[in-house]
Amino acid sequence: MDNFEKLGLCQALNKSLKKIGFKKPTPIQAEAIPFILAGKDLLGSASTGTGKTGAFAIPVIDRIISSNKDECALIVTPTRELAKQVINVFRDLLGPSNSIKACCLIGGEAIGKQLNQLKRNPRIIIGTPGRINDHLEKKSLSLKKTAYLVLDETDRMLDMGFGIQINQILKFMPQERQTLMFSATFPKNIITLSKKYLKNPERVTVDAENTLSKNIKHEVINIDNSKKYNTLIEQLEKRKGAVLVFVKTKHSTEKIAKNLKRDGFKADALNGDLRQSKRDRIMKNFRENKIRVLIATDIASRGLDVRHLQHVINFDLPQVAEDYIHRIGRTARAGASGEAICFVSPNEGHLWLNIDMLLNPDAKHKYSTRGKSSNKSYKPKRKSSGKSSNGKNFADKPKRKSSGKSSNGKNFADKPKRKSSGKSSKKTVRSSDAKPKKRFYPAKKKTKK
Image (cartoon, rainbow, N blue to C red; front, top):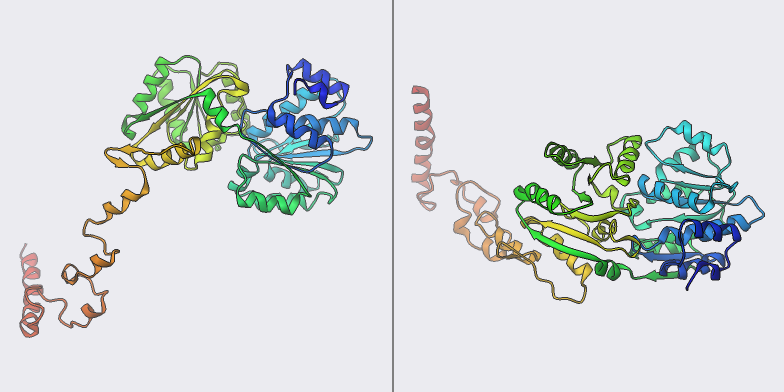
């Protein structure tokens, strides 16, 4: 599809699209928008950076503008950052002169401010599950007129444990509605949820993972944990432009950002423990190039849209391979190119193997760290140190169990003189005589000291 005008959108929306530079629909937009405009429920899958937000924002706005009723839309996202990004897209598409209002309901912000927004009767509501439920319980939010429901990044919401809260939200919504569900993948729990809440949905899948791989240059650095920080410094010094560094823990974001500032870099930390106002300020500074290096946990892997971001460094690998796609999707957005650098320590070999299998499913995967394969098959060899008896052949060796310190085996427990000196297990009389001597003399020596 060459342009948006062929989709039959309203004049106001076409004007906004031209103003913000949306000229040609992306693949996910070209496939999903016609189904949504036709009133169909949709189960869509597309990777980050492919215009997924526009795929549901454009048709939802068109249907609300064209409707003679006071229909509303609810968009649920897993993170605050993603909610902020989504509402910015909606506001850009609506334009400053449109009478339709949109509001954002997320945690970490003053609830009084949100109450004032709700009093203006917004017809587009974007928020996270927890805060939406807070307003529903306070009866400050009504979903009776909600005709459109969008569950964005559904897989992530379920991974974060929002399944119960989503179910609670849906109890307040009309049965007759159009439901759109977007997910990076289609695991069983997503399919089960779609059957429960979607009615004869159209299924749209755009495989953009390979496209991401082509636009992003991947670099893997095998390294010890103790050398990661010095290597990070080297990477930052030889690269230009904004850099996003992913780490595993909140504590690591603060520690690394502090050290980078000490070493002369403009850096800051982003994690879930920060107040929302501070998170917004940090993101604003990063977008405006006031901060060059942002150290973040996986809360930044979705919902962070910085057009000039060229480099993503995985200081720590993600525990789930799919999260790697979202991390590197922060760069190479909208067809641009980018670079992804991965620090792989010896204990992260199996994590990289899973990521490599996801990126290259048809290739033969081999990874070695210090001469050992990252495949889990090498791990049992490390357990055969003589301290474990899990293997059957190992357990059949009674001599290794008869150390006099354990009585778990039945045959071993039948020996009444098990606390003997161990010189002879058959001559019970002598071992019995030796018993008091063995316990008496050491005790006597201690008293003399």
